[in-house]
Image (cartoon, rainbow, N blue to C red; front, side, top):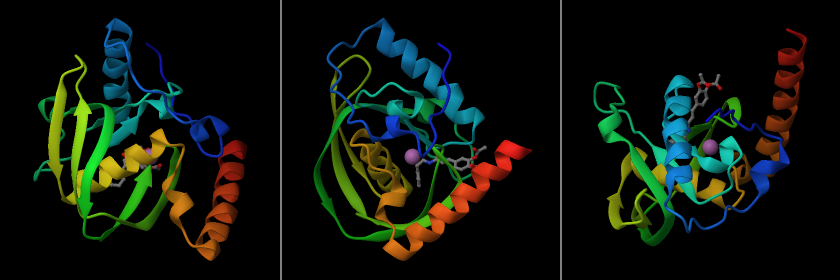
Length: 173
Ligand code: Y12
Ligand code: CO
């Protein structure tokens, strides 16, 4: 399946993703195509809405202590629901749909996640650190929310100005 990343300010990123009901070949093909796309673009997380498939599916591959992302560490998360979260943490986030921008964002420190795997099996995961942050970032995508929406008014204004300039430069080069 050929995929490309949908980038801000594309309105398709604002759609609310639909629950996955069929755990079929089509879903597996999508997940299988998202993985190389994420790795080739140096990503650690990708929601299917970012490749123009607004369903509640996301993948994560948090780098290990050597900075490697072996495929066996890949998490495929379908229909996620956070059942518990606590604490607060700040991390400089980036997003494949908002290229070249990184901003400090406050998130819950730890969470408990209920989700389904690609076969529809129910799973529970306790997450902290980067995994917890990445889950929250990707789950926001499922609601049409981007990390830049969490910036202060002044920071967002600055971002919009810089982003516009970046797009213009990219177009002319
Ligand atoms: C912590 C914070 C945010 C997340 C969400 C997942 N974010 C990413 O995977 C971001 C990837 C990313 C990759 C980039 O590199 C390339 O595109 C080659 C990048 O650089 C540029 O746009 C130039 C920006 C972001 C998880 C955990
Ligand atoms: Co993102």
